[in-house]
Length: 438
Image 1 (cartoon, one colour):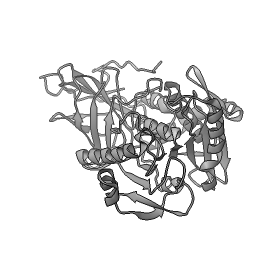
Image 2: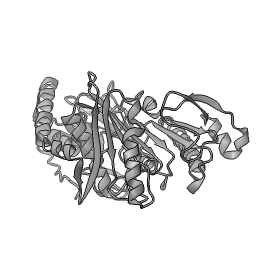
Image 3: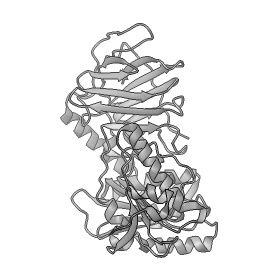
């Protein structure tokens, strides 16, 4: 069951500039903030997170047992802490095994293999290998799988000195299928992802504006058209980047003469012969016309060049891409209610002007929620909110309740938000209210 929050617009209790269809601006009294300075907010946020860490301490038992409840099912996994933690904590690697044929013996063998596959390239970090909720073609992205990924990331960061801004997802074969599926559903969780030798059963990439992805494939890996599918995915990333004027960072490596798991490698320092960059599109049209190049395609090295920005200035969000059993709809610093479905949102904020711009939101009805904290904007000053050609000045309310609820939703200290501004659409695609809530 998804944790949903019901918020009443108590205009007498909240200082807000509101649009009420056709009524213009309404001024109401100065809000009563729960905190009066950034120092107080930081102190409270640290105390909340310490309390949260204590509240999940029993998860150490699950890590020790290598088994964690995920919804109504159980995930078996290995969890290895390697080396000495860096200043900011251990990078966290989640590696998804191959298999995908419904055969437990194959799954067992691939699980043991993945415990070593990328492990050798990691000198310091937390290396996690999930077995899979099921033994099936879609074993890594069952509905309950997403519950596990959220909780194991939170656990590694809170209880094992993991760096929650350096969480990396890798997968080979069936595990590559998993990366294709998981990345757009949880893009705000990862710093970068690597997909090797998988197939994208559903081409959905709209949430990956801020998430770097490395795509690796054997040139002759033709089963289920994996090789041509990776070129299509590469082209789709460029298409989205053109549409939104940037974003969707990626590298694609088609390994020359490679098959599914022979003739190439996604680990190690040895240079590989690949087709990459603009040559991928040429290869898709005429293989012989594409130029080859040599480069290192070590997945771990590629991933660790990237660190997540949990509060990117611009977010592109396709709300239809979500996992039902996750505890929240929230995505970076945006959220929604149940009615705001199948919508593309393009939103940005600017610290200099203390403003939020909704560049695109094709909603007919429902509520778009904008979360704020002092790392983004001045929450003690009015925020200019622009949507559908209307600009409204809204005074955020610094709320203890919102801080607790946003921490609880994702267990990530970066996503402790002090304030919330809601944009509610009237059923005809017009913003009926733009209000701060407390």
